[in-house]
Amino acid sequence: MVDLRVEIAGVEFKNPVIVGAGTPTMNAEKMIRCMEAGAGGLVAKTVTYDPMHQRQPRPRFHIVHPKEVYASRYFSLYSTELMADLRPEEWVKEVQRAKEAAKRHQSVLIASVAGRNYGEWAKLANMMEEAGADMIELNLSCPHVEPEEGTFMGKVAGTDPKISQKIIKAVKETVDVPVMVKLTPEGADPLAMAEASVKAGVDALVATARFQGLIIDPETMRPLLWGGFGGYGGPWMVPLGCKWVARLTEKNLGVPIIGSAGVIDAKDAIRYMLAGAVAIQTCTEVIVKGYNVIRQMVNGIEDWMKRKGFESPEGFRGQALRNIIPFEKLDRVSAYKSAIDRSLCIGCQRCVFSCFYDAIRMAEKKAIVDTAKCVGCGMCMAICPVDACIKIEKQ
Image 1 (cartoon, helix red, strand yellow):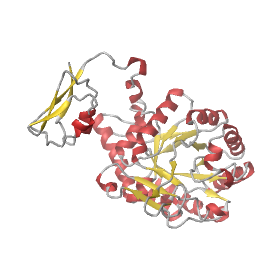
Image 2 (spheres, rainbow, N blue to C red; image 1 turned 90 degrees about the vertical axis):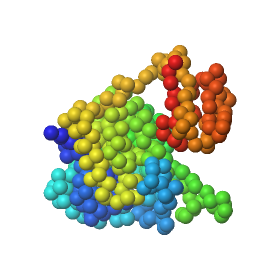
Image 3 (cartoon, rainbow, N blue to C red; image 1 turned 30 degrees about the vertical axis):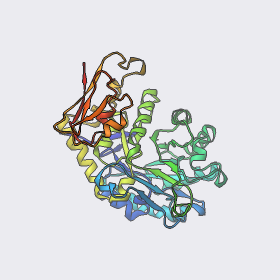
């Protein structure tokens, strides 16, 4: 039997798949869709009193390499999605309605808040707790907030440990439910910010949010669509997110870590948990493919656990960390050489162009290795478009 349940700061989730704050959780109806699709939990779209962040720019979504959304892992979502478009007093009703559904679906409802001063952070958190939120997530990571828009919001506050600590303390003094912080990788040291957050009393950490980007159209010589900076992320962020989860786990901070950024399938979720995450957040994949991906992730995790013989996520959490080789112990002695199966070679010459040791040349329209020059760096194998054509063999 496989038991997918995980515990975060004393709150039990039926599975480790959490939908992050954003378009998929922009109102009660959408939050319920997440629950119906099997999400263990969800983070309601961030609520704020700032009217500028309640109105979404239009158009606001752009996908880099859209054909790759269904074909491979290499696309990016570029957007300037802001916060909930309802005033907090109206948003309370959405949270209340979502909470009733959460009870039926056994899902955990997390409220995300963003204040403009310490008092507002505390007030919003209190309102969400009273509305029924099981946990509070502090949005200290939004990449769209600039310094002139407020010292106490988003990434501006999320890069200043003193401000973040005061926000956390103000909220912790106001609510009884667990409080977690979503860390930003933008202009901050997530490790330092995590340590500061834990000292201030935070109950869980989310690592991490997206980066800020700027895409310029060479033809018009202008930024795309809305004309300014935007959030930039996608499945390419998983290795970056796993790094931070691993580093935070190694720090042994004493609070659970939720992996985030780039999760598009069960394998990504498992990667984060193998790095030490208790659960994961996914948002971009739901935005581009819809709510069905939630069930696919949950089922994929369960199937993998059955195949590997794990009864619960706790059985494999952090297992990859023991296999990380320290820098000083990397193999600098063993000799490796490239070996090309010329029967599979298609003569594309990619390996020839990318070999800086001039160890590969063409002979009769097929690649061939000069083993005397080859240093076994592996670039030829990495760039070859034909599986099994090139191997790196230990001498």
